[in-house]
Image (cartoon, rainbow, N blue to C red; front, side, top):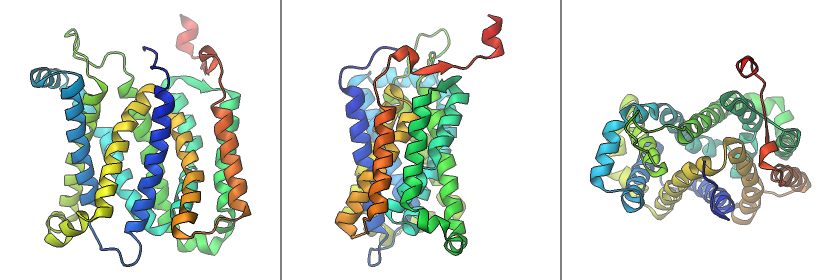
Length: 335
């Protein structure tokens, strides 16, 4: 794989974090009392449709013309179908964002979502036959402890936990969908041979994003039909709410972050993506205090220091050859 241009990886990381923080704040604001009600799946569908148009537009601008696009799609239909799996997982994840941000404030939501960090590390190792080194695991533990410290009082309250059991279960489902979709998507993005066998056709990142979003549109339409809410999604009242400035801003930001995610996984990795999500905790915590008056106490600041220290440790420069340790498998031993 060719080396990334100088500054590209850092730029992708920063943009990714900021876009997610803004999206969570806006989605939370859209669910506050007094905000017009709307069908969340219709917003996700609109967002995925915009992502699809953006991905195809970028392909036509930077990668090839309509003839090449049609030729590549015809030659790589199996790859297009493979994207139905992560697209379904992301469909569940995106819809649960709206559900869970109605149950938790942005800071709490981001704190609890960081419980996926260890899960990401374990699945990443199994999927890529690589082992995270000691510093990386210490960083993940620090980040996770810091995130849990932020809400330790609420998490220790058994009555509060029982009352919100369904919300916690939905949050767990969202975590699993996020981790599995991210790792599966990275496998497809980093595959050595993503073109048609023997045809010498390369599927670019823009087109792979397009495959993802096409499948996402299909799955979200299927969800609306299964729920019997397709008519509601197309109603004038819902359209008025969806076309409000706040929702349109959410669509614009989520559309942009969707494209950035593809490049993030192409040039970085799923574990660093989870670390970026942990950094969102600190920024969202501060922004929630500034915009919504959500308390920022000593425990929150200590939690932020844990997360920041973990991110710094994980990002500490080290030789590329030792960033990961190969897992010794019987197949490798036999070679």
